[in-house]
Amino acid sequence: MTDGPLLLLETSGRTGFVALAVGSAVVAERRLDESRRNARDLAPFVAELLAGHGLTARDLAGIVVGLGPGSYTGLRVGLISAKVLAYVTGCALLGIPTFDVLARQAPADAGRVEVLADAQKDKVYHQAFVAGTAGPLTVIAWDVWAAACPAGTIVTGPGATKYPDRLPAGVTVLPAEVRQPTPAGLLSAGLARLERGERDDPFALEPLYLRPSSAEEQWDARR
Image (cartoon, rainbow, N blue to C red; front, side, top):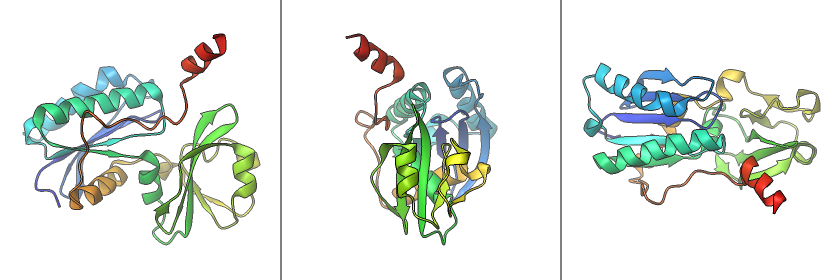
């Protein structure tokens, strides 16, 4: 267990959060605006949370940040903020794949969990977790995924109800409140890495994009 406070940043989805944790408990959090004004709100929210607990950035033991996949703009804002703050203060930086967090938020006795997020154009980001072991993170057509998904699977993630009338038979979709990353879920994943003595290089850590942005695809199409 870390001896100091941890800052938690998650900006991969439509809504994000900034949170502060001490030990294994989340002690404060602020939700980022749904209009994705992360660049405007994130720094003031961090300052507000720290000041509210009599802390400065240099008191942080570490920063835990979601890596996506998700919103290109949101991920860039969240990750660059975490990297700069970790570099300046010298605290630990821990990047956590967002799907790892979502899998952790599934019931502990779940045998197979499949996490989905919208990848646009009838596709989803997909990753399967079997008994806690992660498979490859891929982009796949919805119908291809649905045809291969076995009965008894627990399905979660922001893309789980992308096509509710085309869900495969025999699967269980988790409630909406755990299909998005939570501060407690991100903290759990971050603490697991800290306890193993891991930390990331602020100069090397990158978000999980998997595919080009829509703007890049349109530019390539023009060429």
